Amino acid sequence: MTPSDIAIARPSRYLSSGPLVWGATMVCTTLLLVLLKQALWLVVPFLLAIIVYYALFPAVRRLTLAGIARETAAALVAGGFLVAGIAAMVPTLPWLAAQAVGGEEAFFRYLAGGRLLIDRSLATLEAQFEFLKQMDFHAEMSRKMSAFGGTYIQEHLADVLLGAAAWLPALLLAPFLAFFFLRDGRRFLKFLGEAVPNAYFERTLYMVDRVDDTARAYFQGLLKLTLIDTVFLALGLAVIGMPGALVLGLMAAVLAWVPFVGSILGCVIVVLVAATDFPESPWVVYAAIGLFLFVRLLDDFVFMPLTVGRSLHMHPLPTVLLIFAGGAVAGIPGLILVLPLAGVVMVVAGTIGGIVNDPRLRARHAFARLLRERRITADLQS
Amino acid sequence: MLGLFQGRKETPRLGTLRQLSLFSTLSRRELRVIDGLLHERRYLKGEIIFDEGEEGQTVNVVIAGRVLICRQGEPVAGRLAQIDAGVVFGELALLENAPRAAQARAEEDCVLASLSRGDFEGLIDTHAVIASKILLQLARQLGRQLRDRSPAVDHRPL
Image (cartoon, rainbow over all chains, first blue to last red; front, side, top):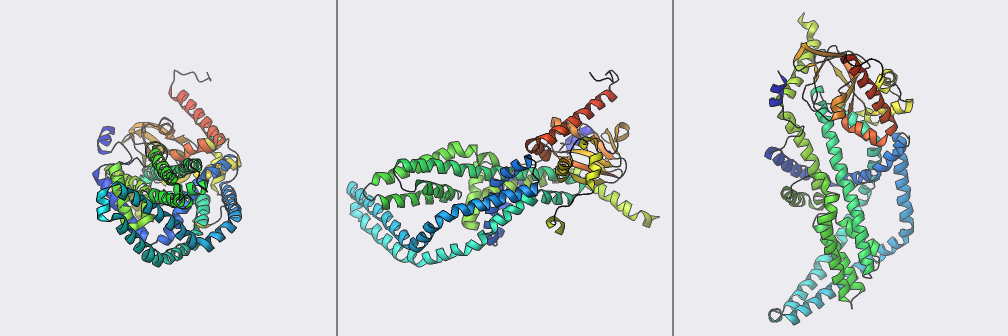
């Protein structure tokens, strides 16, 4: 076989692409999400562990660069993270305890503040537009909100809080998993390499590198985006005079990890706080909404392309379709997981597609197997 | 599988690695770092290691055995070089990010230590001292090869 024959038979790139690979990526991602939904107790701590892993990985790398063994570096960084976490928790424990005691009361207070804001806004609209007055829009909406607040929320709040508390033990798994990712990640890679036949070895290394690059770029990008969002939201909220601007900014930035829904929920929380704490100053609420819209636009057009957007290289159409599919099959964890999962599946599907479309590679593998079989059976044949 | 969760021991390969020219200038600690990155591969006589024109993702060192570098599919007529134990091959594809310039076959049963492009580039970022020592050894080997293959080049250093 001449080099030109091989050039014709072999695709020029390692990663195959095309409608089949794209279709396989979308189907596999959705199926994986369906499977992951069955093991959410493990998926959520695993996801948090990956985020912690990529957040701490640069520190481990820095220590290894300074000459410390990887195992020791992983233990030092994970231990430092744990100590810092505990140190940060200790001063906030009295506040958290107070919130836990008065949590339900505060929840309904903020809900009442939000309802007051909506009431006032509806009254203003009714005063402006005659047709709304004729429809008795304000009274009708008030009745519906009363029914919703009086029955649905009160019935389900306890269940939601109990459900959230049940997740706590599973979440404690996250730092434990992150430590082992940091310590044994390389050994797992070698272990995987040993299981792959010689013919596919370089492709597998390439795939693992690409998967790691994709996941690292996504999660580190997500963390950078969270930091940027927190700073911008906290500064903006502080300027308009909101109390607890940093906490609210951080909460809204973390909620934005859930595509679409998270940003809206973050905005709603800040609006409820503004409406309750400043009942006589509706401009604070409007300023908060304006700030969220401004930061959202900055995210979409400036920060996201510079951070998370660099990692996936996916067309917006399949991205939006996948987000909807993720939400439909696995709820909020599905919304969070779908994009990084699709990025990883795309690399794996592309690599497998590359191998399937490369007859030379398969022929080399078959030849290597034949050589081994001949060696094993040499004495039997004689 | 269970080996994954066992404590780390000093591998017997460390002494072998110290004998290889590519790693001969590394300290014991640096060798341990490299050992963690290398993948050991075993090839039977006649097995293809890589083809001409293939994208190169690894640089390889022969730990045991012998490797033949030849024109694609011409192991006799197109014989270009013989790589013995201790010598590096496949480094050009990695350094130049170019396709493999020739085919590599196991001329005998051989054991190779492979370092991936990702790890090699990571090494430059994370262990600059180790990377510079390896790159210096690579440059020395390339210089030797250039002098051996080009009669026009004076064998004295320029």
